Structure formats: C-alpha cells, structure tokens
Image 1 (cartoon, rainbow, N blue to C red):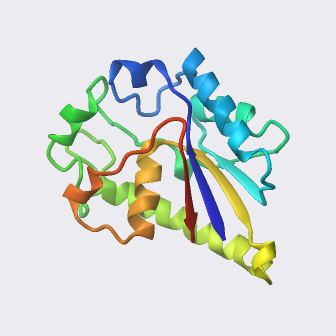
Image 2: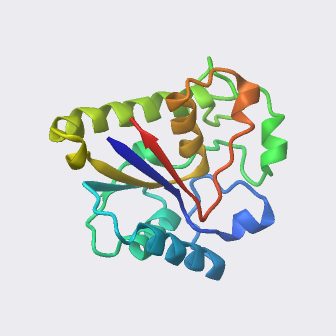
Length: 185
C-alpha cells in the first residue's frame, strides 16, 4: 500500500521556532497557502482512507487539502507529548537528556521520547496493514492512504520504513510544511 504523509501547514510556533507540542494552534496565512498547494498536488489521487491527527492545525489542513473526504481522527498520530518541556526551541530540546532515547519512553520532564513515538507509530502502521492490505488484489488497486500529521510522526514513519536505529541519524530528517512524503508500507 502507498502511504502519503503530509505535515500540517505552517503555524505561529513554526515561525518562532518554539516546539508547540499538543497545543491548539491554527494555521497562519502561509499555512493555508501551503495546504492549498498540497491540495493541488494531490487533486488527481483517490484515497482509500484519510487519517488525521486530533490537533487543530492538522484538522484545518485536512479541511483544505481533502475537503471532500470524511477523515478518521487517530490519537496515535498526534504530535509529541512535551510533558513539562513547553516553550523550548527544537535545538534546545535536542540537547535534553533522553529526548532522543530509543530505550526510555519518557524524559524526566514527562516528554515523549522517540521510543514512545516509534511504539505508537508502529502500532498505527500495523493497523493500517491489517485493515487495508487485503484490499490490494492487483497493483492497480493498491490502497492509497493519506496521513495528515506532524514532523515527529513523519520522522517516526521514516525511521521505521528505513530501519533507522541511531539517535544521530534521526536529526537528519526534515519534513517541510508543504511537502508530501510517499512510502510503500
């Protein structure tokens, strides 16, 4: 099956460089424009299903990108839980103990680590495979799933698909607000 991963459009925290976590931010004017561009890029595709994070910014993005679809909200693709690590830049957070941990599920401040994100992302991907792979009898009928989520979950998907297992390589990943990542899962 093909998985199309879209990061939500730009938000005020994207501009300021502060990691917003599970806050209730809306898209900026630029974020709306980015979503309209993604809408145009995906216009010719017919999706088997559309999954969206429960955050306001991803729902707004979905309403612009695929207004004709009824989407499924799934908490497993929500943004990273920051615990008590609110109002930090990503550069500051990368330096925090256990922020990138592949063994511990939470930092001392209660923030979700990569291990936790990978765990829930694996669970999500496994449920997609179980639900949709049997639909694919021939390549022309290959299920196409659209996922509208966050950089953190996109990074987790990338690392699972590419079997990335070291913390330093995680840092090399980037997913722009107006970019579509496509995976065969």
